Length: 273
Ligand SMILES: Nc1nc2c(ncn2[C@@H]2O[C@H](COP(=O)(O)OP(=O)(O)OP(=O)(O)O)[C@@H](O)[C@H]2O)c(=O)[nH]1
Ligand SMILES: [Mg+2]
Image (cartoon, rainbow, N blue to C red; front, side):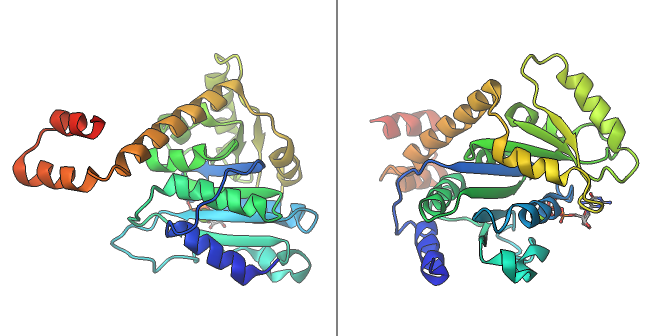
């Protein structure tokens, strides 16, 4: 595969200059709070699955428009890329969530589809599970793995973010540290009320515990019914939002709202016309 052509295609997709059709295949989102070990886990998984599998990684960079793209590409430093026997079957791309013409989740969906159509058998999306837009990035995938870590005294992060509902698998990372066991127990208890609870496994990106199992599960984990529905919900909301954003009158209506005091209600009515 010609990497330079691929990079050019992906840039064209990001810029809205290349349309792609949905392509069937495995897209797995790896999401969780900042610093929980997502990138280290992706690295460990790539070490195990490459070169047998061709894997693309889309790292969604939450760089704010204020800090610009300075950190771009730095957030995901993968040791597996130094191994030439594996790096040829891996492709990594960072996506900045800077303001862009299109919606980030739908761009990610298109990038993933294009990669699947170009010989990659797995696309991993690394995204920080922090807010609504990140949840939508994860909902683009057809499997979602939520990474948790030892509690930091503020309860279960993912639960707060509503991410557990989307999870097909929960990974408690940093099992080498105190407190990981406690998180596993807390999660098990809070999920015991759900009839289709996701499995929970423990990993340590430092000792390697659980990474073989996780690598297998990435390829084989079942889609839960409730996560399917939660993803469908996010996707539908996203599609609806895109439809409004793409209306030719959208920008002028925003101008009129800010400059002439057009009400939200009237704006909606005009958009519907
Ligand atoms: N003790 C321990 N440290 C870990 C483990 N996994 C990752 N770390 C450390 O946690 C820090 C963050 O790891 P990353 O992989 O960058 O975490 P991340 O979730 O990708 O972070 P963001 O992308 O910034 O949200 C690094 O200093 C890692 O060395 C683990 O299993 N055990
Ligand atoms: Mg990371």
